[in-house]
Length: 132
Image 1: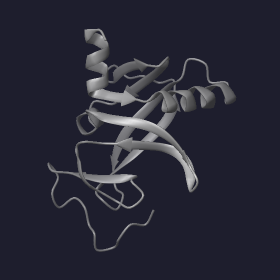
Image 2: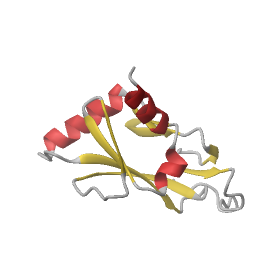
Image 3: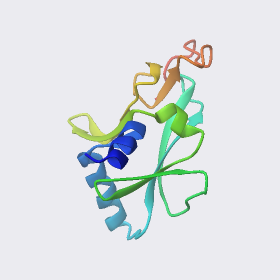
Image 4: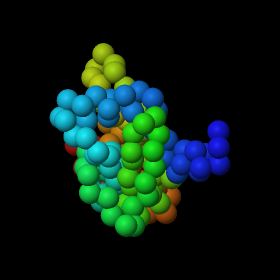
């Protein structure tokens, strides 16, 4: 593993299964030159929620990675919450889809699509429960 690859996987890791799923989506939708954008936004039942999109609009301030022949872009705010995270694709009896394992999350909702970090205590509200 060269230094550049180690640095990229330290920032955000995409599994081969996730990369295959992205490549399949890009091929089916005929989206040549597009990247997987991974981002964090406010909301969700635990304070923040994950998001992903296929897009061809890369900003100057984005972090750009390439793993398993897939281009990944992360905005400058989201990278702070996603550093060290792994994007995977799971195919299970109860359903299939992308899953993010985030070492920065100190709590998550039941479905795993929203989270809270230790830097943001009080951002989550457990009173309403998970509405996933």
